[in-house]
Amino acid sequence: MEAWQTVVALTLMAGMAMPLGAWLARVECIAIDWLENELRHGIIALGGGALLSAVALVLVPDSLSAISPFAATACFVAGGLAFMALDIALNRSGTSASQLAAMLSDFVPEALALGAIFATDNPGSLLLAGLMALQNLPEGFNAYHELRSSTTYSSRRLIGLFLLAACLGPIAGLSGLLWLAHYPSAVAMIMLFAAGGILYSVFQDLAPQAKLARHWGPPLGAVMGFALGIAAHMLMP
Image (cartoon, rainbow, N blue to C red; front, side, top):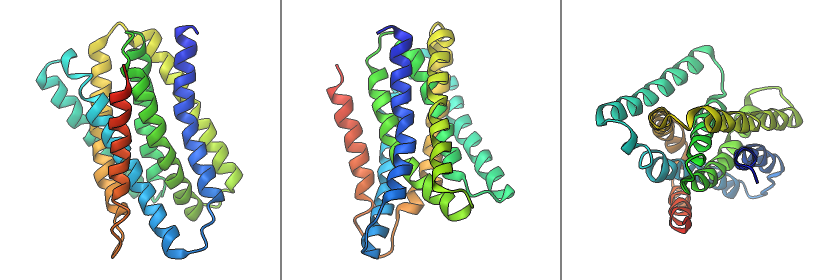
């Protein structure tokens, strides 16, 4: 396959995990209320663990060598501040699409970085694609529940929205491959910016929602999500 075809395939695969997660949320049918509640909280924690693994294993380590310590720190903090500003804006507007916004806000920069990394023949691009898919699945699941309970959109319309969102991946990935590959410092800045935003989202949105009173199983979802990231990282050549 040509490089651009591989990037399109990888980013589309990662993006399609979003509508897949939404579809799983739509067909979810667990008759036992406490088990359904615990499953949802566990899936939220799984997404958080996968996001943390993307930050710790790919986004930060693969970017530090390309820029100075000051620039790296500034980009990381700027990402957190940007996601905080987005969170405040969503809250003031009264919208309840915080998980959808967070999902897209980390998916697009990661797809940009994936395209740029692939141009350098770095095996980290495959790992990043896998981690993107792993995090998008529970994020799609949770964002579907959030939108279904707070809007009048039908299930079909919501899943269609998630399918459109998945198409942003190939667009961003090709942009990274064709334009950013020759600017490693710019790629590093984007990756660190996304990492800072992801870390903010994990502790602002996902971690608090994963906790369930008198239930101790859901946090293991975060352990499993990070463990899957470790396994993928070690299996990459």
